[in-house]
Length: 415
Image 1 (tube, rainbow, N blue to C red):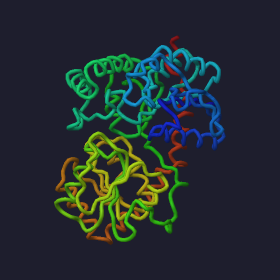
Image 2 (cartoon, one colour):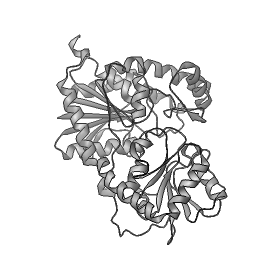
Image 3 (cartoon, rainbow, N blue to C red):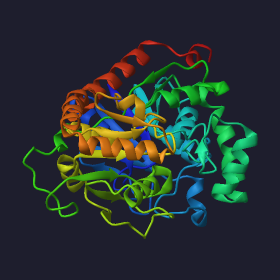
Image 4 (spheres, helix red, strand yellow):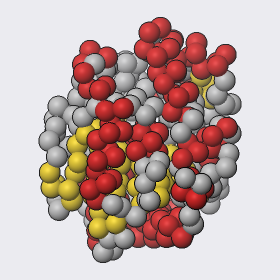
């Protein structure tokens, strides 16, 4: 099967989506499929060429001329609409490679839909976040509460508050244009049921089939039981581990309140990337490290008592839930977004209401106190983590490709 993977960015640009697409590309090649990648170019890697045995087409569109418009110049995000320059270049790649399936990820979705509109290839789009329904890609209304769905009355002021007037209104308008192309997608894969629900409400997406397939983890990176403790965690004793962006929307401030007021009998270790509101005043018993290498993070998971992810926004399918499970550690997570898709409450971990510091504190203290229950949850978590391993999930994705290829889409029948 010839597969063209399309994504906003690709390594060396690093992020959850980029890692997912790179792992998927290698896994598909390992299964004998012919795979190439198309992505928006970046200053770090502007040129096309073979990378790790996979040819990567780095596309340059009109949006690249707007150098001052990007918060991070190394991540010039494509717009959530059929940007003519990217559509033209991607269409040329499709014509040259003639893929059976174009599998698109991120805001490149309406661009890929437009590029493949009258081509005899199928378009599968994976929804990793709420970016086709929410211009902030978080469904987190004004950084205060989970959003129950898009509407102009809510989205416009929220976008303006987040991006500023000009950029917020511009991106919101582009997203409305991009949403109209969703009926040109042949099948959606949503990494969480909440994404299928929210995007499925959009008028252009209502006739498109949806599949819910979670993110996957590369089981080859799960460390052995005797891996040494990394330097970023205590040399001995129990600790609780949080991994992720070190901001309020991830529940970091709630964790600090728990350690400040309840003083659990274990250290709290925070590993992640800085946010504008990353705290600098840490209570006793808390340590924080940024930009930790992934092998060290996995070793930290292997030695923690349990992991925590008390997010306040609807996280889609966080691998920082799956990774500790794979090392045999339970997770305390917020009952929001796609987290309940991954944690079986009372069997592989514990779910607590988002933004409920009392419930979070009680759950943390309970698991630290009841070691037998914690170990039991961890053992069950390790068993369930097999469902989220690379082999199992990639097989489900390939099955989607095959079923989508068998079905001739209306856009080709009626042309």
